Image 1 (cartoon, rainbow, N blue to C red):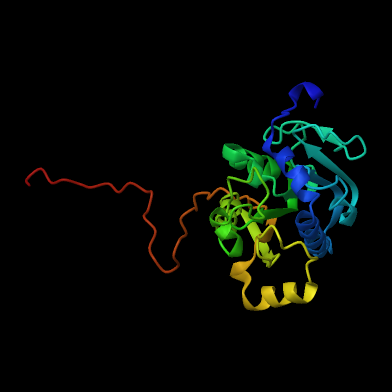
Image 2 (image 1 turned 180 degrees about the vertical axis):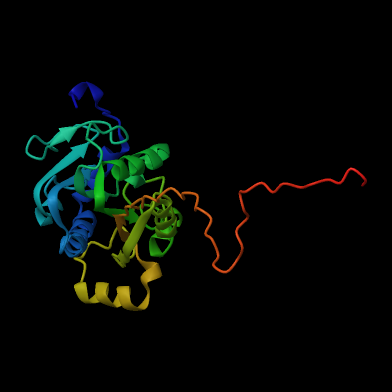
Length: 260
């Protein structure tokens, strides 16, 4: 991946300033908590994050794998917060079946008509029994009113949202098994709502009104179907049933009378 393949106008870059606002920082803080919960118990050699959301190490610091890397498809202007590599997320130069964990932090919300291609690439590079973790904005809920509120809290550029139910259908079509689906960040998307997110309020929202959440996290696992070789059905030799008279092979002579 070289810098000749960059996309300076990528919509992902428009959310950078929004994430630096108090509202965006509160969201990143809550997402760090849910990612830490998701990564707990997922081990392996390699974890790959597709798309830069916040700092490059915001979520990867919780990875339980031996190595981790972040791939983005746009150059970060901050020299201290560069991704590991730059390239096209829908055409990854990564070997198939070589990654244990793939993280998509709102990546599909900014992929537009390439969402399916990015998801297929994530499935391709995942090893058998590897894990996929997806963060996404819910089109409904409290934040579903964002279009009716001037200056609502949804970050700019996220114009192709995928619902949690639709995401579940997509990963199941790829023969993945959905392990968990959680919803989080229960706050009004108002410009004046700048206070820190209270964990107690977050816990109540998960328990009593999950459909009103602003975001969701889906965890899926790549399934492997093993083929069982079948023996060729050989033709069985006919068995002789005891007690029955077998036909004789001797030719009997028949005498004919000339007078007949």
